[in-house]
Image (cartoon, rainbow, N blue to C red; front, side, top):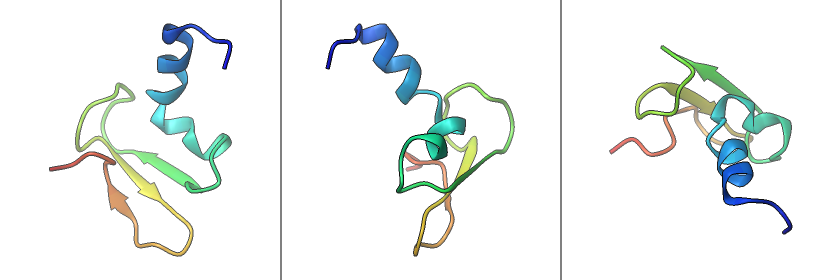
Length: 57
């Protein structure tokens, strides 16, 4: 991959847009604010139950 660490982080940390480029997520609902933090979004994945936040403890 020919991209800076900043460019890669900008894509990976923009969880609200994951559904645009990864087939394992088909919808993201931002629950509070758009910044990356725990318990702030709900992920919808094909054939799986909805998940609140991808790294919730």
